[in-house]
Image (cartoon, rainbow, N blue to C red; front, side):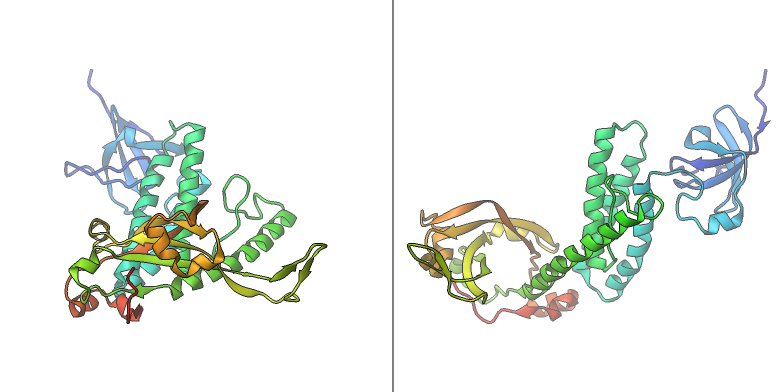
Length: 349
């Protein structure tokens, strides 16, 4: 008995990518819709609704989802998943990648290689997590953990590209009128607008702290003892404490006062690690036992002096990118460095 092709006119969606190895086969991309016509053991013949190509492909690479074939209007209004009920976080990934594509192109045109590499890294992470989360064999706990990572990556990319953030519901999905009550949605937007003020202040602080550090005029002996320090100040009122009560001396006026400091050693190994790429480092935050010790707190931290204490649970994130070579050649290759202030002098411990 020989196998024969059986008619099967249905709509299928590609679950896996397929690269053809023969002339009669057609390539498939994940989420691509196919109009099937015939099937045989292990193979299906059909027409791609995206590319209009006709050919055969493995039956285990697709899933029959409907007896109806979607119209071209449905396809034009779809992203990567036009006819499949995908997880909301998967749909969000698809949409956000389309929005980031414009910024990716702008970074490339402007030769902003630092931001270009950063957003490229986030895109690769999202694509990898997307392939993982559509696996139906994952447990509920694993999927929740993956979704948290995805949300974090999306927020980081949105902050760089300028894409507006949207509030999320208790499940971590984007809050819309379809899944959230109007009054709750209003509260989420109001809460997010208050948080956005803090984010903008932090972003402005980061922009003010961008610095191009030249090491070409530093001697080799001094280069072995290089550190980046960050002083942390606080704004508070000044009060006079008496035996009976604490009297407010400043009448509500806020004063800028020293609070803490962090120090990161710029060792040769660290500089080699971030050579040509932007990497994140963290430094512990220390507070002095007395405010008078703050004037030389950097030296106290480096020498592990007991006059300073590590502040538990507090760290400062520092992004570094090292470029080796002559300054003119580095600036020509990485034009984004031209807009960053260069150091004029250094303080060595």
